[in-house]
Amino acid sequence: MPTQTEAPAAATAQELRFPPDFWWGAATAAYQIEGAVADDGRTASIWDTFCATPGLVVDGHTGDVAADHYHRYREDVALMREIGLSAYRFSVSWPRVQPGGRSGENPAGIAFYDRLVDELLTAGIKPAATLYHWDLPQELEDRGGWPARDTALRFADYAAVVAARLGDRVKLWCTLNEPWCSAFLGYGAGFHAPGRKNPADALLATHHLLLGHGLAVQALRAAVPTAQVSIALNQGAVRSLTDSAGDRDAARRIDGLLNRIYLDPIMTGAYPADVMADTAAVSDWSFVREGDLAVISAPIDALGVNYYAPDLVSAAATPHEEPSVYPASQDITFHQTPGPRTEMGWTVDPTGLRDVLIGVHRRFPDLPLYVTENGAAYDDQVDADGRVRDDERIAYLRAHLAAAHEAMTAGADLRGYFVWSLLDNFEWAFGYGKRFGIVRVDYDTQQRLLKDSARWYRDVIHAGGIAA
Ligand code: FCB
Image 1 (tube, protein in one colour):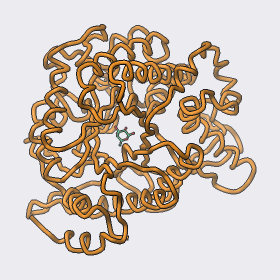
Image 2 (cartoon, helix red, strand yellow):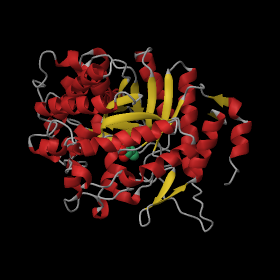
Image 3 (cartoon, helix red, strand yellow):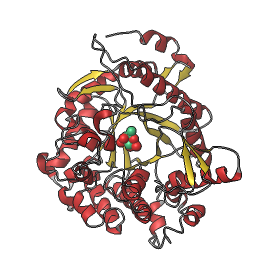
């Protein structure tokens, strides 16, 4: 095992120390790694349907086999242990637990997570479970999907089933992963499953996802009074191209539609008035019923922040013809932030993570935070000696951990950090071409290989910090 990175990491660890109880994690999601889409009674989710529709996913890739984690979870937990992870964030597949979206439970489906959680605990790794990472049972989409209010009630029913079976051992819950993506990419822009392109549906979905979150919080607390409950939100640093009033207003609007539309109802019990006004041409928001916001704003124990890159926007002189991912935003232009880019084309800018964490901390000083996702895709190669020298990924992770540390120094109560991702996996509409893992997966043989970044992360965890 190469030790090249060990010496510097250990020698300079004093420079950027993290608290001894800091959670050093990695994250994945069910559909992206599990495969085994027809095993033990699982039925189709909206992502199975989306992948089966020609032209929607690069090269026609699907999650049918993925990283075969469903059959290899023991080996994968052993890798986590080798890296020294203290926590692992995975998601539970709704159509495994409730095939066809029917209430009740599929014992064989939930048994997989039961085994996984036990395996993690035996390895000394804290299980952090996400209830919904985008794999809605297809039957529930057929009955209206997230734009339909009933889906929120179905989600609460599912949450209760999972809580009853895993609640005694899961250390942190995330109700939803990135509801912005579910609503805006899935129902508004059509880039994600189920592929609808309707801005009004995106807002309906937003509200029902949030209602589902609130009802799931109730279900989790009813089953497990000591449950630690959070939600993983895309929180982005939205910056204006210039200081002009028009550009600053564009940044305000996108900040509203990306960040505040989710964070504010949860934390303050109200949708931001400016966001409702900005979207008035698309929706009158009459779907918000009395009492909904009280459910949505039930206290959470922590907030999960998923951060990859900042946004840079300006006011467009004339509205764009092509539809925007954001409802009622065709008069806003998105620019590439300067700086190096990852294989996704996303700018590497750790100041965005620092700013997001400090921004949330300033608004909600008592809210514990986790970075529930952060990482980078690069076009990794296996060298002749069998090593993956992913120095760019190491640089990305190091810089973002340093940014997180800066936010902690500024007072943010950051409790942990989860690298996206443990394994190379199915990157949604991009298929398998984008590799985010700190562990390489050879999709022909399903062999796993620790990249240099995994060894570097192991050394960071071991030292409890990184070089400044
Ligand atoms: C996030 C998703 C995650 C992964 C990363 C790259 O938006 O939550 O599943 O695809 O992006």
